[in-house]
Image (cartoon, rainbow, N blue to C red; front, side, top):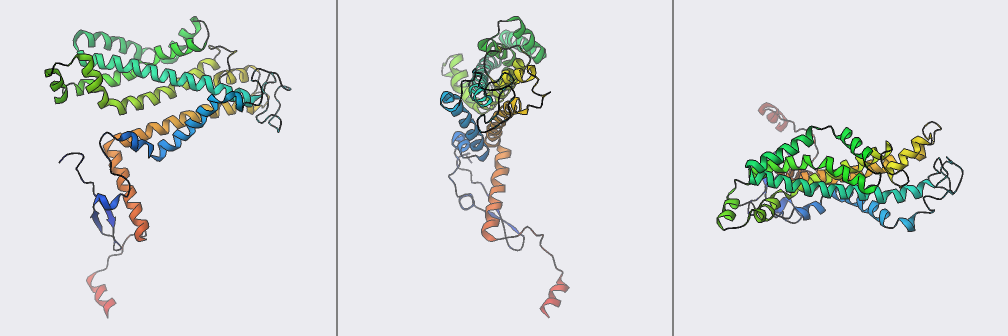
Length: 346
């Protein structure tokens, strides 16, 4: 039976507590799931929808920052460490700049760096992993050695050393994060390529005379897109957090406005010592909220592409839907003996 014609059965709970199978057409009122339509399923997933709304909100803030910010983020507009008020919604920094304006403009650099690093590390990791798993032999030995060397080097010390000896700037931070982050996606995708390379569709492509890179990019890579997408979202989370950490340590450009430099100046201006929570809490919340949104999308991809999680989720949804329709309680049914039945009949 093919995957597209396979009928999924749900479970209906009867009033007496018995479980009876229900055809998939009656159990699920939404559209049928089709192979290759995981993107449509992702858009209908609650976790993905909620995370996507958060990310769209941050993207809109980054794009329309000049229109949303009440002040120039570098302008000194008031006394240092003024608490939030009607004039300054998030107070002022330790230098007298508007905190809300800095937070809005900081979204551009932090979110932009995270997306660039996430996409670049995923592309490099995919190319290295595909080449190592497909060609094998000496190519695999060399690329696996390079990947293993990058993996055994501690990440944070490597980031600190590279950032300390290179000129501070946005692209320096991006380059450092890419160098330190491509190895793990390459390792994961290499193992998947080794498995897919032995499949029949790859052998058919070889017999038909297709080139190696065409087979890797047109035959093998599409079968790993769910893993690639999940790895990319994880890499973006890593990049946003790592960039903020580097800038908090003073290894970025302190004159640039980002969430990391906001935390850096909050520490240098004794924001924690004087109790000026508004100088560091909003930036930390923004970092956590963006990471949470990307994690929700990542979990949604796992739910959709993992057959075990998908079937469990569909069964739970069917059970809840039929309980609501039949008004069945969750109480455990009471079993009576034959004698009790006769006594009740009398």
